[in-house]
Every structure is written in C-alpha cells, then in structure tokens.
Amino acid sequence: MALLSCNAACCAGPRCLATGATAQPTKKRLQIVGVDLLHRTRLREGVPPIFSLTFHHSVFPSSITRHFQQSSSSAPSHQARRGFSCRAAGNGTERRPEYSKDARARAEVLSPFRTVRQFFYIAFMASGGLGTLITLSKVAASLSGIDNGVPLESMLKDLGIDIAAVAVFAFLYSQDAKAKNAQLARLGREESLGNLRLELTNKQTVTASSLRGRARLIIVAGPPGHIEAVLESAKPFKDRLVERGCLVVPLVTEEAKGAKSSEAAASSEGALTESSSPSPPAEYKVNIETERRWKAAPLYTNEWRKWLEQQMELAKVGMGTPVYISLRLDGRVRASGLGIPPWPIIVAQLGPMTGSSFMDGFDGAV
Image (cartoon, rainbow, N blue to C red; front, side):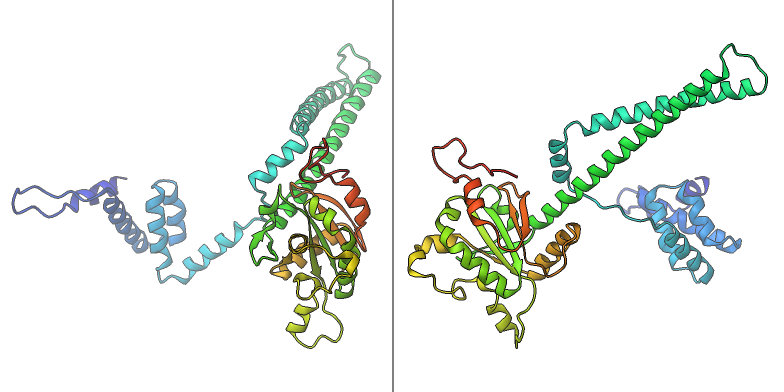
C-alpha cells in the first residue's frame, strides 16, 4: 500500500488556470495506476504474474484485482497464461440441482416436520458420537491396566449402545434426506411442466402453470392411433369433463407409419385441433362452447416429450407406451396409468368446479 500512496503522490492532477487548485485524481484512478506500476516492477524482477495474482488478491480490493487479472491476461508470458488456465479448470466442481423458492416452500408445506426431525437426528448422532468417544477412552484406559471403577463388560455394553444409536439415527437421517431430494425432484418436474406451453382452441397461447386453479389437465400420450381412440372414448363424457374443469392435452409420442411430411404428421396429431378431430355421432353432439373448452394442443412438442420421458423413466415404463397423467388443480400429479384414462372413474371422483355441493371443486381421491 506504500507503493500505491507513493504513486498517488506522484500522479497529481493538472492545475486549474482560474483558481490554481490541483485536481485530485479519483480513487479508482489511483488504484489502477498503483497496480500497473507494481505489475511492471514484478515483471522486471522476474516474478511470474500468476504469483502476483495470488498475492495481491489478498491485499488489494476486488476492483484492483479485476484490473490486475486483465493486465495478467495480456502479458506475453505463455507460462503465466497456462498456469492461470490450469487453476481455473482445477476449481471446477460438480453443480448440484437447484430448486426454486416455490418448490422448497411447497416441500415444507407437504412435510412440515421434516426439518425438526432432521435436527433431532443430528443432535442424537452428536450425542451418541460424544458418548462413543468417552467410552472408547475408558475402554482404552481399562485395557492399559488403569482401574476406573467400572467393569470392562459394562463399558463395552455402553459402547455398543452408543455405536448402534449413531448408526440408527444416521440411517434415519439419510432416509429422510433421500425422501426430501425425491420430493424436491418431483416438485421440480411439476414446475418444469408448468413452464410448458399450450394453445387453446381459441388460438390463445398459455402456460400450464397459468391454468392452475382453473383447469385440471389430463395428458394423454401415445401413437396417433391411440390418441384417436382416447378422444373417441371421451366423447360421451365431454359435458361432465367440462363441468369439472378437465382439459385433455393429447400428445403424439411417435410419428405414424407411412407419414410422408411434417404436414401429415401434424394432421395425425388428432387431436390437437377441431378441424382434425372426427365428427361426433349424433348421440354425442355437444355445443360449440363445450367442444372448445375440453382439449388443448401442446406447443413445442419436443419439450413435452422430454418431460414425459423423464416421468416414464422414473416410473420404469418403456418408451413409447401409451400413458395418461391426470393433474390436480394446483398442478400436482393426481393419478397416472397405462392405456386409455378411466373416464367414468375420473368423472365420479371429481366434483364440478361450481355448484352448491360441499365437495364441489375438490380433486377427489389421489
């Protein structure tokens, strides 16, 4: 810092012609000038720039350190650049998955006592570990011939109890931590689902999360033939599905055989628009408003398929298997299964969105 003040004194600013006062340089300019002169001095002395970077990072503020890093990167020494690159690569660590505050808050709501349990687990492990150390010291003293007034058998029994307690509470803590990570991972997947986009039949584009509290998404996935069969089986329940806020999202997971172009593949998605869905029989005719409100088209289907593949991998279901996933009003997974959704059961378990019944608006059995 003496060198910095010396350079500050030598770098007085120009005098004002009107007042004769000396313009004082700013703090940032003083810092940069001092570092430049110190850097040149160390280069003349033969000190490698990588050593100067490590030394001055602990002395000077971060602003000077950043300027010094820029000066070191422009130095002609190939050895200095190579040393800096190796150090930067060596500091790399594996990144842990990051979850949003909403996901962590939801995890706390779903398991409110987990933090308390983990605290007591750690406290009991610490107590058992301390007891183990104390008992080990007594056993060692007894084996060396020092009489401490306690039988060796009793000390060994206490030692076994302490070790068993530590092992049990460590196992419970690890199981609770695994459950917490699995829950956070599930909530993270639900959040990623909420970021996926949908196109309603009125051409409005929305995210799945924006429909929470207003619609229960029922995602059906499979080949084009399966999608057509699912929509055909849901026709008798359209009115009751709309009353319960159900929104069917058909997702084609593979192209139909013999598809010649992307237009043909898009039309094979069924499904996704009113024009491509077959005309309902006379006994299942519904009004236009019901027809518009009961299904939506997934946008950016590759992202939808990626999310679905993660779900199927966790459930250990083969890729390409026709599945359905029913969501609650809050966006959580309510039920899932293979094949065609059980429409009669879904309609029976879910209450209407509006009405006078006590169970209206509830998500039913989970």
